[in-house]
Image 1: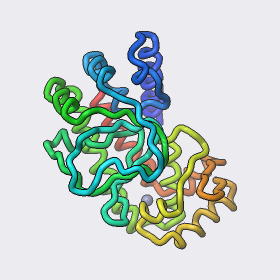
Image 2: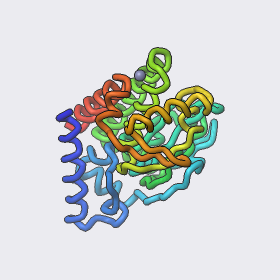
Image 3: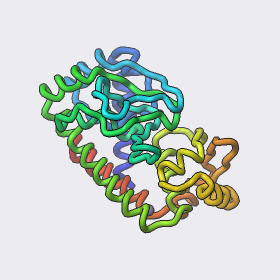
Length: 257
Ligand SMILES: [Zn+2]
């Protein structure tokens, strides 16, 4: 847990520092910040400050198409996006990561379509400029490769979670992950999203959400979730939440040191 607070302190320090240095409005004007951007050194930050653009994207916006070319990379600040194969969501990414990370492996083609699940902001950068910076900065390449490791671990844990834990535990895990990403106690999340993320029908998700609401852990009205008792939600969630978070914190820490 202490690693989480160290990372938060690091992110806040960099955010304040950007404001002090008077960097571009795009780099200074965001909160909560993106974990990968928070690990950049000064040289990378100077380049990124001139290249990044703030995007505010609505739900269901298509960020990548299936078998398309990655033209832009995105660093979510408050939005959450999911990569879909058919109707199944393979992975969701928020401010703990980036979209277009495959470029560090030399992969320029997308495997599925990526859509915005929770509206919000992301910083966008041209993919060619990003690749050029990967060539220039071994540290940046190391950070992004580490993030690829995080994604692989999350996918493996998620696959095991799907086979081992019940719908309510998985709903609680998903809610905690969303809460971490959006930086707000209240956010919009449809039952369709839960179904896509958990590989079940929407009707299967509803009783689990009702139960969490009855226990006073969340409010859920017309697709709007409000986290009422995060500690209680942590007890309701399976250990996969903590395992995923620890994997992410350890790799990010190692890459940023
Ligand atoms: Zn689980």
